[in-house]
Image (tube, rainbow, N blue to C red; front, side, top):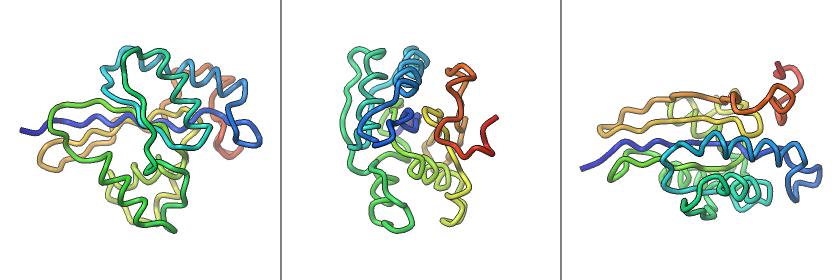
Length: 175
């Protein structure tokens, strides 16, 4: 028996200039993301080994008591087209139907969020560059038994007040 996998994907919160942690804005973004997800029946949080993703996941998990948090090297900040084996490993680990219905959060980087969306939409590999998520933008993809996949939402920022939105995006995309 297989179930629906609900993959909740978030880009890490805004990092410090040296990327060794989160800025004050990033700390706020991560806390608000945690509040937003507090009603979701998450079964796990996986995150990139990079400090900005580690800290984002730690803050989010503070709002989700009892949900296990684990590092996932597959979610590391890599240029997907340059490392096809790593991108394939990420897709293999986190996508497709699950043995039972699951809700998992992954905290990763812009390139990896874009790759998940590109894969779900079955678009050419070159199209991932056209997907630009903001910091703590929330994307949800559902993987159904039988292979059907649906992107439910992309880059949802409704958990953030206007002043905290669109960080990590090019200036022309900031609304």
